[in-house]
Length: 333
Image (cartoon, rainbow, N blue to C red; front, top):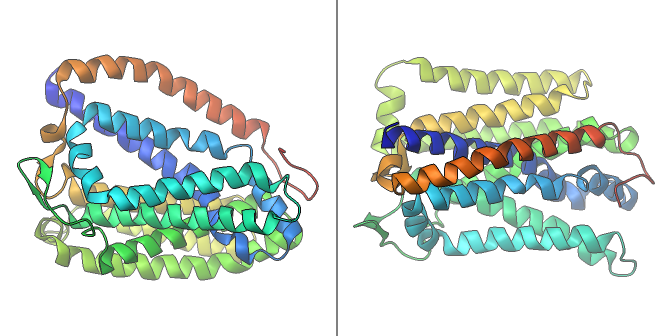
């Protein structure tokens, strides 16, 4: 096996871990984003109970992707962390706040409103910071000799703020469609009501980003507009998923809105990969430039190939055990 083949395997595994995290942690971050707007405190209890059994397992994919990225492509950390110290700190702080809120809110009485805001604020900050990271990846990094040479706030631009807002809206849509699937009655009706406005917001922001991105990078513009190719299937599939969300919400389907929203994220994610492939640290370093030593990659890969099936089985079992509707007065805690 050639070195570049191993790098490709690692790129696939990390890419798989990232999309699994986005899909699985995205909806519970979305539930947190929607938390302050819920119809009542009882509905907030139900909202939190829909994700309480699975949220910590969902974040396994963040750890898996982050650890795999460090092991297989250390150059990414050399450049990405100095470029995104503040953004990554905000994301981790948000995740910590919402994790603590999960445990304390159910036991609090007079201070419950504080934990409500910790859960909602942590979810919102974490989601927005993740969007900032995506936007920074799209616009690229200022590097020289394999190190980041830009400023501490290069990550904060109008474009990255827009991608942050876009991911907030996208996660909120995942959250609302998750609630459609997992709840009933007044809370489900509220989720139906807000899903279409959230879909409209996602499409508007994604549309602006799609128009803006080619003006940021000549390579992206060349790849998408030099000739009509098969990659234009991805935007078509994205619009098809959006139409399916609209149709299924209007027809009061319960499972299909969430499935179609996941499809929307997958196609948008694939579009991002296609736009930047094979640059792992745009605009200068490909995944082969960033790869660690062959023996290091092989050694860690063998261990990871044992761990991933266990994570998949555990995840599938958890969702199976806690399947079905969550009702008031019922829950994991």
